[in-house]
Image (cartoon, rainbow, N blue to C red; front, side, top):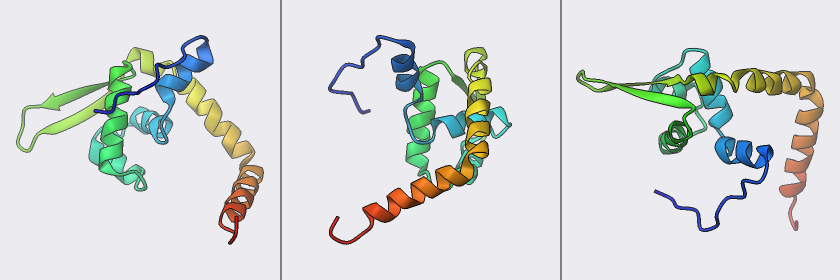
Length: 125
């Protein structure tokens, strides 16, 4: 397991939220679990750009931060499901608000993201 070399700065609420939600897929993982996609294979289908390893690492971190719980069923083959904790459910209104903001500003966001991507992909830069 990766151990950070620098201790996190936990001086304010934004530092704390950043520490818990930092990770490319964590917000989407929380949203999809909220929508009922509880198994790792379902999450993999919903987020095909994420590797299985990255999903497992981020699910473990969400579990360590008490946002999700993992249930292992004693069947063959083993079945694993993730659920939001009561604490994790308190994030859903925020995640929903962020998604609505993104929907509301999608044209502008898409434009600036594509512009930045084009600049980074220019030869000589």
